Length: 420
Length: 193
Image (tube, rainbow over all chains, first blue to last red; front, side, top):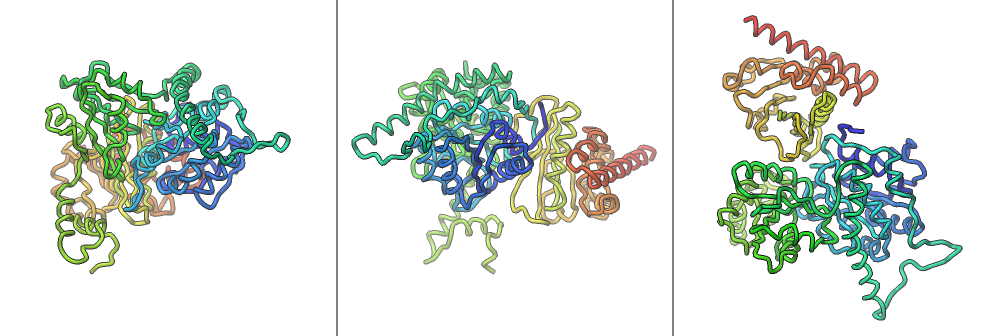
């Protein structure tokens, strides 16, 4: 049924329809509306046969999910930002043990400086944790990806992270076609655990493994992720047949077939990128976009194929590897190795700074006109003068003080009121 | 595309207003997108919320810098926020005040805009009277419906009742109706003049 609904509520409903048996979560903005809503749905009986655990931390949340999943329960949790980092150790255990846990990450920046707004630093920091990572462009896709995530997680016995932009999607009201219980039941069959803590048939989940077999167990994690590259498109095709709409899959190409310049991006910014692509096409410029729905596993062959005819690839990403460069950019460069294409790394939208059509258009016009150096890392809309003034201040005096406070004072936003 | 920006203070229901407006537009068969700019979510702090309404699906996610309509829930924000940024000469303005533009020192703004597209509504008073709370968001939506015709009063009523069942919804619906009528009367008077 098509409804005008908040993204968090839509996702909570989608998760409910997937019939999780254990939900363990700890609130953190901007994910809180999702787990609040789920706890309500358990309390009111809309979600039956489910135990909702209000745990003491995100580490506890993921640990409880690991235990419950090992005992054969379908599990769910959600988090953001520092919460995901607090889970880090348990994330690697969930994937290393091969447990089919599904988690929503409402993407948010990581401090310091503390910041509650959207970017992709949280998910990107866990890109090598062995979780599958899917990124939603809209709330409709967020809903659909959760339904597909349970199918994927349980068919391969791997954990899946569904990433949706915090606030931009979680707190946006837009139309979402919510599936029926019958549709979801038919698409996500009851969980048949591939390993189970059963007193009648005891096994150890989490045996210590020494040098004699550690590499082989880890290698199997990689094999499963590679298998996911085949499984994800199959699930998306099944989804299209069952629900009548295209959603999920590995990549989302938009007007790329003949495009000389292709923008690569993840998540909710894709809609804005598509608007810019259309406007530039109207002006006779050969531009397209490639959305990365599945970032882990990295669909290297599919990305190479999609970008094989481009001359310029502009990777616009909401995170970066400090001291190294773009993260998605490095992966794109790997996928396009030895192709005659320039890959531009552009960091944008950090800490909730809006990525606007105007800024994207300026960037792409500069790239097309060869005014951008592909060998350097670029920051969209960076206030260079603000940075330079702070660098200048830092050169003087014995104790120049903290950058964050200094720069807020510089632009007229008082940080703490500790001065004056 | 019709883009609405709502300025208020924490507690005045700016975010809820944008959401209700999106529901009202959706119920009338249009596409709509409402979203807030969250920041320091404190009572009294400046809050901005946005709503886009269109006849085709909405992909754009940037904040609204050039609104077709502006709803100002609290005129004291004038001294704190660049309220009218991006509002063109054909823009609509719904201002919550029992004063006139001139009394608020907005004579210049009034001259810049089309007088048929500017209304002042004592929405806080209307809410106090009919809802029992000084929360002006819903009466301002009634006023917005009357001024712009982007949504009908019926759709606003349905969206409000759906969100707030019972007495709270009934009171807010009455407040929306009173504000709607206030704007229609104002517009008739200016048409007669």
